[in-house]
Length: 333
Image (cartoon, rainbow, N blue to C red; front, side, top):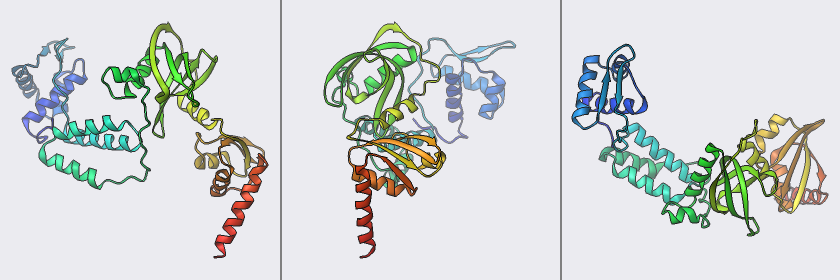
């Protein structure tokens, strides 16, 4: 639902309801200030809400004010024009970075259906004309999410919400998981946090099967069942940094070490934490990473623009020389 003009009395009544929803108790003077009216008008608005079936309790005294009656079931979500437009923008951006397409599309359709005609046309114009510099990402497939499917929810979201709740409540989770090679396993996990990166969800935490801090792709989780065991998250744990380190150490075909002749700050600006581990050393920055193809690694090094010295593997030098010859030939065309 969208509000009328900000100066319309109905708008202020709805704004008062929103303030009451957001605050356990709020004073009459503060309400009057926030709404831009006097306290007598606030009392009239409270009566108007009562006529609409919204039980507003007025409390007198030094610590008095207004509040909603405890246990009252709030009416459906109401959004201002700006808030509705912000929701649409957020959904469009979320779809771009790979959030579940089905959920995003259905939410967009629902929001647009309840917009006033004029705002709906403006939002549609935005959808049709908005461009992104960020490349579009398809949402990660999540056919393994049986719990969400059985509940009729959007595949993937059910598992994400289950893991988020378990993390907040510090409850150990039993995971049924399939590895990168497709091998099914069962393990107990103390989740430390969820991370969304490049269109995929990851959960990191203490894995009791290996006894180590591990990172798992959520789209490979067949089921996640919170148990009764509790745990504490160690001090200093950073789930984002942990996931970045895990992605940088994925066991591809080749282990690579290259000394970059630059500063650590400059190297971090050019190289994502998920692509490599960077360590400051005498003479520059040691980049440790893994690669499936060494010709692609040669192209990456050339694109960085830093002088470099290859430590390993030796075959990478041959690929750099091949790239140099190709570029030399292209320059002479």
